[in-house]
Length: 495
Image (cartoon, rainbow, N blue to C red; front, side, top):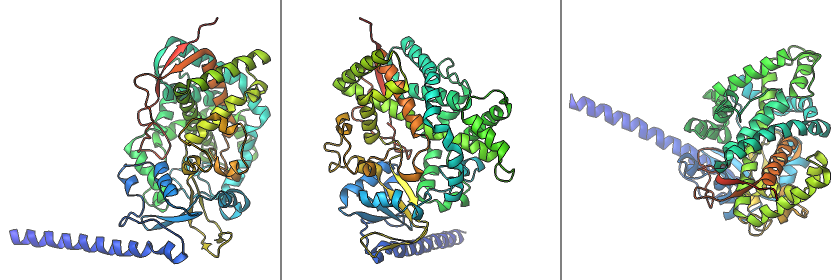
């Protein structure tokens, strides 16, 4: 009996060993791709290529790409994700070519398309043809006139925020507080829904949004595969976001959509989607596409906005002089205009500089991805990038490059007092070119209104729990603090 078991174990070990040997042999050959192109690539790990530390959760996507960005003195270089060659671009002129001037060669994202029907129809994931049509239909939501009409709505929501902070002075978790504000802002301004994040302990709408970006092992693995091995997503039937939350948002959005009375228009996203539903041919638009458009708005605005507000508050804690200067500007401009308006916000130059510096130091999505959709010869070389090849732009590396931003770890809003000539190619918090973030204007408006009201009414300070420096969470492709952003907040007494 023992002989049979031993023979069986030897056979299994032999099969496994042979499989590993053959896999390693195949991938070792694949890892010669960039060498044949004459493109530099750093030393690889067996089988996994350059993402061993990501797989083991020893680093973040941002820090991994920055590590190679800092290490390699080339305009571009190659890395491997298992057997997949990826071109990483760090030269500002070449980045401009990829994102703008030669956009028709790089018109789609590299990221995998989710198995779920809602997620696969989101603007972010769509390939060029579908993306172009959807983007044109959603753009009217984000005009200056529409945003101007949203300021009173945001002011009403920020009143709830200020009242909540008044009642909860002391140590707060800034990321959670700003997430409540952003949840209510998007729900009200886009969908005509009262989410009630500040009046309920954990409303369903807020809980569903929280789970979308939860730093769980499930999210980490699924999102890592979407980002780095997109060909696996359909084979494994993976979804980028937590599906129960996606289904909840679909039901809420469609319920609001179908119950909106034709005589009652809010000029919000619901009205735009209703017009699409009534004007498009039935085969061109269905419930999943409608819900995907609404879900895209939530996702595009939520995490970037809440994270940027909370990171700005964090930096104002650490840099008290910047906080004093910003508060002085806010008080002077609000007094001049008699309140908060689009015009008064436009005049708050230091506020804009603070937000830009936060977005430089903490780009929530720390890289950009594209896929080569037509064979492309890199300008100034005879190197051809074939159709289907993935491209990555290490945005966090660019933002922390001392050649562009001296003392990059220092929070210095004055960097943005004057933009240098290639700022648009190196400061890319909302992406660049035609596929930049559609929610940028709404996101920035929300950031401004929230920060003005918080800094005008409260002093933010470091407390014992405040991280310094911040360490990033390794279980998400986004840039977030691994312990949150706790800080002390105190009401400013009127003199």
